[in-house]
Structures are given as structure tokens and as C-alpha cells.
Image (spheres, rainbow over the protein chains, first blue to last red):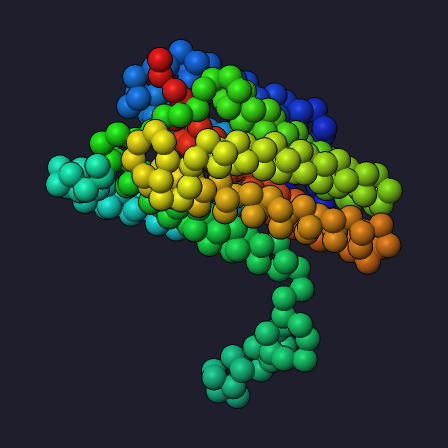
Length: 103
Length: 211
């Protein structure tokens, strides 16, 4: 969190490393798909991997890691709360399943 | 002087007191606010997809590992690599090297265009197989609506991003844009990449054909 974070130039090697990690995690996702894991287990693992990938992209490519902490606290918690609130819809979709709407 | 008068005179001396543009140096934060709102838009589409999929009994899983998933993996590679070239463009612009900035931006645009061509091809194939918004040969009719809405919205963002980066490359080449402008366009591009990191597993990998 240095003061002149806006003009800092980060080494190419750091970004190549992050890029390699993103490719590797994508490779794992594709491999899981190839293996045809059970659907709910696969969904759980895929979401975890995707959140890690999103974190890598935001921290390094969008360089949130190098911004002032207050920028991160202004932007991210509100977004996470809003996305979590969407889970309120899922009991209703299960109800729709039992009513047989989706046939 | 009362406290209120002191506050007023202090405000007048600040950049919000009038007379100057108060947004100087806030471009990046403006783009971040847009990204947060856009992230909620995509979340809504993904939640809508999940809602319909949970509520349906015979959700189609039509994607063969080859060619569909392999193609989608190559598309992911295109986007991830274009993010890397975008980072290089931002670095070059911070060093003040305009020619290199433009070259890296053009490489980023190429990655975006490759994504668009591959994805357009994929859409074309699915439409020829008889998939429409509200019907398909495999199962639950809303599959098409969720697929086309999600990937279409994302494709629209890639398309817009290619145009945006084209403008930035052009203006940077002529010396009209500075490093902050390149960086802000980079934030948008990485966000488009980030959204694909959710669409690819949720829409493609979770719909692999099981034989």
C-alpha cells in the first residue's frame, strides 16, 4: 500500500506467474469436467476454483492488492453482501421444482 | 467567524467548492463503481440461470467434451492471454512508451476478436442444431434463454471492450490519452475476463454431456 501506488510498475514476472496459475486452475476445471464428477460435488469445487481465480484477477491484474485499503473496503464488501442476498431466491426455485413448473 | 462559516469557507477552498472539475484523478474510481454495478448485473443473470436450472427436471447437458468444451477452453485461453497483454500495455504506458502501449493494446484486441469469432461459431452451431430462446431438442425449453442471455451479454461486453480498446489505442498513439486512461480501460477488460471465469464453469463445464 505505498503512497504512489497509481504509478507503480510491477514486474512482468509477477503477471506471468499469475497468468500461469489462472491457466492451471482452468485446466483443473476442465479435467473435472472430463472426469464427469457428481454434479453437486463438481459445482462446489468449480465455484471454489472460480472465486480463487476472480480473487487473483482482482488482486493482481486489476491491482486491488496495490491500492489503498479504503478503496477495497468501499467496493468489495457491499458487492459480496448483495451477491449473497441473491441466495434468498433458491428456496423458491426448489418450490417451483416440486410444483413441477419446469417440465 | 462561526463554525458554519469556517466550514463553508473550507469547502469553497476544496475541489468540490466550484470553479474546477471535481473529478480529476477519479476516473479509476468511476470505472470501479461501474464494474461493481455491472458485476451485480451479471450476478442477476447467473442467479436467474441457477434458479431456472434448479426448478427444471430435465435440464439439458448437450456439450460434448470435444468439440464444445475444448473450444470453450481455447476461448478462455484467449481471454486470459489478452488480460496478460493488457497488463503489459498498462506497464508500457506507465513507462511512457506509446508505441509499445499501442502494440500491446492491439494484441489485446486480437485476443478479444479471436474470442468473438470462436464464440460466434459456437452460437451458429447451436442455432443450426435447433436451439432457440424457448425451445431446444434436448430438454427443458428455458435452457436456450439462459444460455443466450448469459453468453450474449458477455459477448456484448467483449464486443464493446474491443471498440473501447480500439479508441484507447488510437488516442494513445496520437498522444491524447495518458497512462491513467489506459489503466482504466484495462480494469474494464479484466472485468470482462473475470466474468467469463464464472460463465465458463457454470454454463459449459456443468453442462457436459454424460454418456
